[in-house]
Image (cartoon, rainbow, N blue to C red; front, side):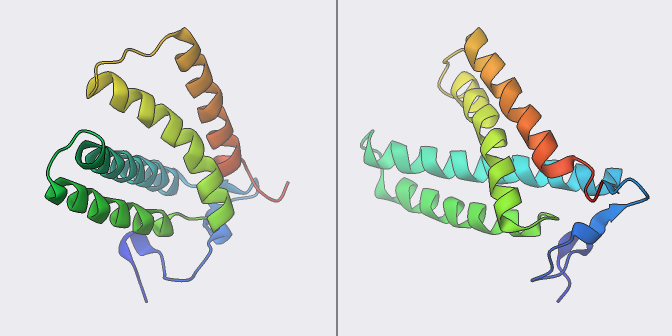
Amino acid sequence: MPLPGGLERGVCTDALYVGDLGRMDLSTVTKSVLLFVLAGLFEIGGGWLVWQWFRSGRSVALGALGGLVLFLYGIVPTFQPAHFGRVYAAYGGVFVLLSLLWGWRIDGTTPDRWDVIGASLCLSGVAVIMYAPRGL
């Protein structure tokens, strides 16, 4: 069954790597990065909403909305062009960066240099895990 972005349900697509060097094409990489960002916003946003309800005494409706958003987070990575283990390993690095950015923008906690260095190292790992040429 076709899904958005030309992907198919249940299809792990190392076949999206093209050319003699086994590289992903630019549109596939772009979609993948956007999916990581969307998943991160859903996970962090949903978790933040649950936190507001449970820890900060806000409405239970806010917590329920957070649960729904977290459910959507679970669906978004299924559109990635790689297998589960690779996607979730790489997503961990994206999550680190997005969490720091969320804390900075929403909670007003400015990342320090060690946060920036750590997030940069994580993103380097994402690039290698998700986008390095395969089959060389």
